[in-house]
Image 1: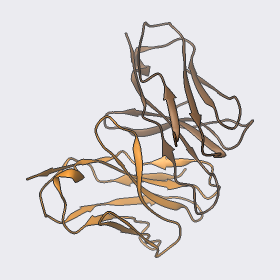
Image 2 (image 1 turned 45 degrees about the vertical axis):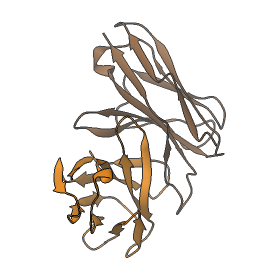
Image 3 (image 1 turned 90 degrees about the vertical axis):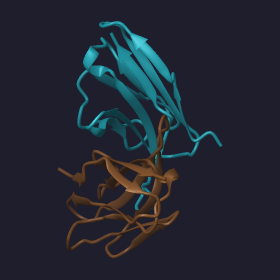
Length: 114
Length: 112
């Protein structure tokens, strides 16, 4: 029972480079999310997908793009990385239904942009 | 928009002390409320939840009651252990159940 799997776990990028963070869940969840976690800021929602084929902006979407490839996979792309994007990124999924919308999280990706 | 406010940390306690971490929320409609815990180097894990007013969520000795009249969901534990040292996040799920909003987290440090 893998749950939510994120890759990679660690990454160092140079300013201006691009990369894609991958996320997959095996719980047949409808909703998937990308958050970033910064000291003193808690978790801030970057993008979310309420169902396959839909994506919506969260609190801090600038500089990111997402793709809900299918029901299992939700990727986050940084087109031109900036030092301000140094953070820990978490993918999560949930059923998206009433009374049972708790989120399950991946282990996180620690990204450093130099 | 929806938001969650929780007390700043760190909260420092001795083992077996009583714990309260305050959480209040702003939301339209009737959100579900959650407490998550994050141990060092790990992702967040659900600790407990409540889906309607006056519900009490409980797990591992922690509990929290959904108080609609005060828009609060305070986390309590009667006797903390060193192993409870972690960061605790209060969160809500909007009425449309489409996204989760988190507070900034409260670090708990328990000393022997």
